[in-house]
Length: 533
Image (cartoon, rainbow, N blue to C red; front, side, top):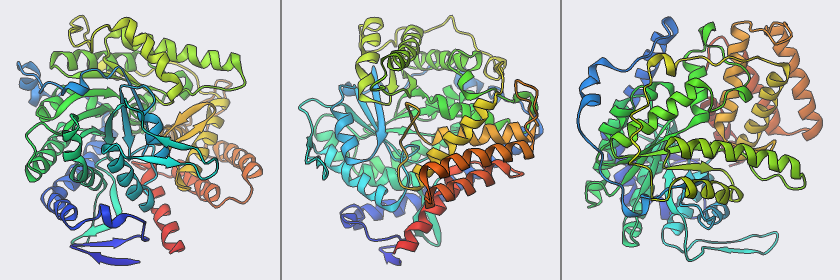
């Protein structure tokens, strides 16, 4: 299945249309970026491991003394382009063709098309996603449902398109250069900007991105250099490519000013990536019993450490002229149960009221049905395009605020839910779908990551349930057997469920906590592709 393609070695099944994505000029730029920045990326990922080893010894984080001058300086980021000044409601979803059309037509201000946590990085998904986004950039995208015959086309007015490439930790396992797998981030970004920048600029917009999983301002500096390199290579003026960074790691929460500064020619905002932030908090302090979190359902944005992080983000962004974007409302409408649907909408309403009232410039929703709910709230609180004039100088956040462990309980219900939801999500991810409705919530990879890291943390520290029982290896293994048995009764002999159970169990019961579940799961997906070819 391996074959040379220009300077690369491709190890993937042939996908229709890939020749239009993997053109010689596009691959030449990709090779140039990988050879220029690949070693630096790998060194920065290795540096994460060194910092983790330090946290394992001493669970202390603080604002960096060596960058105090940046935090004290008088500077701002480049102003946002016209079509990104009002971002009051953003919808997100994978790079599926029908999803892209529906999201662009949803009435949201912006749509983030996701190559990352809501996308399984199969070769088919990566290539078809690039094709779909190419057609969306040109306004030619269409889709006819083969089952119903229903045709989907773009409305006259659509959301502004942003694209999220994979995180810097992810390789593109199908493509190697000079004997090494290339960066998934570079693959997603370079191919998209190469094929679409000119078309987007011509229609009065531009190539806009969300950058995920950053942990250090030097990683932001790398992204800035990669973006500038591509702008120069494509003849684009500096600042044509714009980015919003997700603050979804505990490390990055201490470096928001520095991340804005490193990317100040390209950045126009930060986003509260709340679910991955919780995952990062668990992961980075997992070996310390004092940082044990209660059930996931008890860890919401009103908790002190999360409220502190969101308000610090608003203050930091508005001081520097950048947008402060709120987090995801994962709820989806519940048909056929009015009471449950009203309860879900009440949660969304309270969440968005808090964000708009605190000074966020916009928010995320996971379903088109929630766009009007969020929009009405932000329209009432934010008559202008944004709230950049709200400087929030009343906010004062310390390291202790960001590291305050929330109080709560660990319950058998919460433990079982982590197992069930983690397995359901991973089963779908292995089958090729990274955006999954589970219990009336639209879940992405952060769901499985929170689930398995909580289980690992509780098991390691022999945490106690609210009824006094100890979560040891025997207990968690017994409960996992019971929950997997229920799923086997429901789904029967399903290869993806079988593999999900094996992988999830290994990760939970391992002596060491894996950095990312999706790394090992990606290997499985590649194995499926190789077996089918």
